[in-house]
Length: 322
Length: 134
Image (cartoon, chains in turn brown, yellow):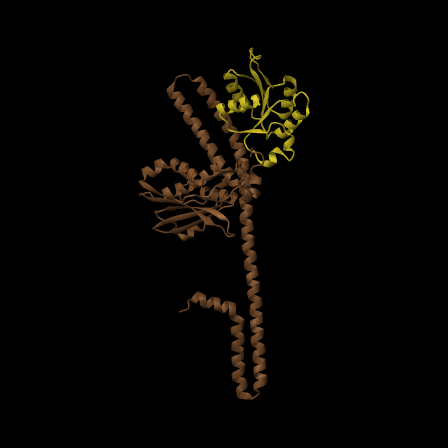
């Protein structure tokens, strides 16, 4: 049975044709009573129907063009907003990093002058750690604005994954989450910034852990895949057996500042930054979720050595300083 | 201008810090001098930094990049073009480095070593040591 919205859409898309057909039917009925001129009657009917079809298709194509224009405008506005945000982030980062540098240097001096007072030393350590934590937040913002220094090097992904896992080991243990590793043999090497890649996995693992407050399985699968043009890719799938993500949230999940978590603990930039980093590496990210059963995040990166990647390495590493 | 030198300057290396953040200069000077390895001069603008570099011929310059009036890149270029300062190694110390900030003629700017703020003292001392031994 056709739903009301579907019927409405059919009428909207074919309204003029339907009107033309009705006009023909009315004309045919009255004319057949009055005369027997079949040829004239058929010709007029055909012309009315052709006029209806032509006008309707014109309206439909105009409507499609307007929709396309509206979509493009929305994309442009979104990219402008992101560019503006990047510029603001870079400016803020510079202004914040200078006082942080002063705090870190000041604390270094205090620590060297404190002697053996363990309590004051502990206070200094805590202040220093907080300053460095603030610096990491700023670096996160800079990653987002994509103006942070990146250093591309050839490397294997599994050690990066293992090292990142060690960062979240405590949380895994605390929430009774087991890790299921499935790493294929002979995985391709990747040209990447290892620190940024650690940030990608930190974000993915943290999200997975937070989705499983009652425990579960964190799955990590690494395998060789094939890209659209047949080139080798490395695919890493991170899955959890947590609460899943509703469809309306998945659509917004890569938007900057979007978060479902407690506001003070999260910036809402995690997956947006993750996507930005993968874009910089010519990689992709996809998320599939089954509410109540869990979520799968699939990332793919182009495999291979320098010759495949020369184009984008050039932008990030001219002399090793960037 | 901040000019303090220790008496044992004949064995110590002289470092010039050029940074518009006065407090940063103050603490870095304290920390470096406390290691006993360095005498530290400070300047809070590019123009002042150039004058001091010519006058005191430091062994190494720590140079901020983003500064009002004269950015660090321009300071570095002027130092490179001056016979008295052209061989002094420079380490850029900056809160942000992006490609545009080192300019299109960055191959003419000597040194081109970077330290990112905030920097810890051991990292700073190690980097200075490496550049002095180059």
